[in-house]
Each structure stands twice: as C-alpha cells, then as structure tokens.
Image (cartoon, rainbow, N blue to C red):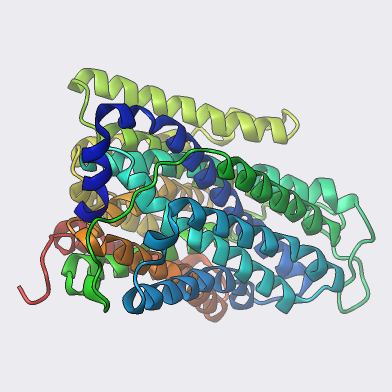
Length: 492
C-alpha cells in the first residue's frame, strides 16, 4: 500500500492524523448501512420462498443475484483498471462512494414495482442493481479505511469498521423481520398462492407486497441522505504517487491470488449459513420465521462481538490482565445489546435463558483470541479450525446443540474478512487498488456456495447434512492462515 499511503501520511503529519476521526465516523456509517442491506437478504429468502413457492436451491437465487453483482462490478472495475488505469485513483474515493450510494438508492427504489407486479425476475434485477452500488462502496471504502492511519493498525481499523457493519447485520434480522413479517404485513391486500389461497407467515400473519415495498423505500431514502451528508463532508483525498502500469500486475502476487480464493470461501460460507438459519430452524425445531429471525440476530451479532474484540486485540495496547478484562467487558456489553434489541422487538417476552448457551461460544471465542494474539494470520487459522469443528458438531447432533453450534460460527467468522483482506493486499504497493477490486470480485462466493448448499439440501431432503459444504471452505481458510498469506510472487 506504499503507493497510496506514503504521500498523504508524509505530507500531513500529526495534524492530519487528528482529522481522521470524522472521516472514520462517516465511513463506519456506510459500513453499518451495507451490513443492514446484505442481511435483509436473509429475511427476503423465506419471504420470496413462500410468495413464489420456491425450492431450497431456487430460494438461493436471491444471494446468487446479489453477490454475482459484486463479481460483475468488480470484474468491470478490474478490466478498466488494467487497461485504462485505476478508476478510484482518477475520480477519488469520495466520488466513488457517492456513485455507489446513488446506484444502491436506484436498486432499492426498484423493489416497489417488483413487488407491485409480483415478478421474481424483477426482484432479482433490483437486488443486482442494489448490490452493484454496494460493490463500488466496498471497492472504495475498504482500502480507504485501511489508509486512514498507520499501516500497522490497518487490520484493527477494518475490524472496528466491520464491527459497526456487524451492528447493522445484527439489528437487520430483528427489525427487518419485524417490518416484513409483522408490521407492514398488514398493509395492503394479502397475496394469494397458485391455489388462490392467502399466503401466510408461520404465525398466521398475511404476506403482502407492502411488506417489502416500504422497507426498501426507507433504505433508498437513507442512501440518498448519506450521499448528501458525504457530499458536504470533508474527506481527505488520497492519490497514488506512482504510475500504475496497465495489465493484471496484482495477480503476480501469490498471497493475493490465494487471498481471492479465501474471500470466495469465507463470504460464501458466511452467507450460506446466515441465509439458511431461518429455514433450518424451522426444519430442526419447528420455529416460525418471527422467532427464528431472533436467533439469526445472534449469528450476525457474533460477528459484531468478534469484530469489536478484533479491533482491540490486534492493537496490542494493554497488559495481559487488563486486556482480558476489557475483552470480557466488550463481549458482555455486546451480548446484552443483542439480547436487549431482541427482547424489545419481541414485546418483552423473550426470557434470557433462551440465549444463555450463546455465552459458551463467546467464552470459546475469547480463548481463541488469546491464542491468536495480535497476529492476523494465526488468528485466522485458529478461528477457521474452530468454525470447521462447530459444523462437525452441528451435523453430528440435533436439537439445540445443533442450533447453537451453527449460530456460534458467527463469532468465528468475525475477523475473517478484515484479516484476509489486509493479509492479501499487504505489500502490493501500486497494485493495491487493483488487488482490492480483485478481492471484492471474489465476493462471488456469496452467490455460488449458498446455491450449491441449497441444491445439496434439496438432494438430501433437508439442510442438516448440507453443512459439509461450508466446512470445506473453513479448511481452506485454515490453510491460508497457516501458509497462503505469506508475501511472495509466484515466480519466487
């Protein structure tokens, strides 16, 4: 990242460092928003599955459409950067973010006509356009956060931003599920299935077009407001002081190309598990959507806990005793934030005993963090091994043991994106923006792996044993944390 970081850091000195607080606050707001949007897919899947009477594999077309947009947008970006020069370097990070917000707003607005004419294809197109905007946001925002300060703390900053992102992914199932399955479900005419019967949620509430139209109109308004905020906020301009040669020079680096596979595996597994939890809990424990989505919040909330812990752990700033105390405090505070949100949304009828088993996995997560220490690669290795082990536990058990084992994986997914990303772009220098676009392109895993798992689940007649698909991914991630991350070119 030298080509991007050295010029502003050297020129600005300590004074400019102080100005990074406002840009970081703005950026974390963006991370929060796209966390909300991405996890709303997990609410859309059971909604569209019932509305259009889809199979398990067909319901994964939601994720395929959404995440294939990341691949398409990043591929276009890569082609332009390798033939014409890096687009972000030319238009600036701020303009890149504004364009991304505008495209996402358009995609959100398209949900209204998609629901009005009740067209699955239109829904998928709207999701694709929405995700194209998020693609540009990701390409611009991830490296921008990484360069807003010293290179040594880049992983810590990304973990902090991803922690706020996970706050969005935690709250989205709770309140997004409430809006779609409860609040807006009573607006407008109930939808009918192919037999002419009313389509109902598992708890007997009607399903309507308004249930998805109004939430996404709200999202469009938020994207527009964020665009206005960012337009009038000063964001430091970082430009590379090196000429980036045309061609796919970033692919010369082994740790980047293996990192692309790691991002593919990680995003695919994380999305697959999150996408299936509501329907999986219906199969496993007969939980209705309105109840299952509360447990989904703990899966995504685990990412929030782990990312805030990662932001602290990777800084290496405290004594051993103080570090343990702070990490326990962070974990408990985050746990009660998640539980409190669920408790309020459930109308103050959600006893804490329902979720106490989650604390066992929080304790395991703390132990894994202490083993990983401040080393990004070692932590990635440890977390990947634990995640693979939890999937084995899930498949070998039933009932609440299987449920909590799969939910607990969220805690260990937490640091994977930021650790893989910073390890993969390390020492790329002038190829850092191109490497970033290649890594975002690899989010395609979120389109492929959930569909594959859904297809396997259809063949097996249920989701339970299909979890061997993401388990394979975690085995690869363990390899990347053990060896694949090492910086060198292929010819070496």
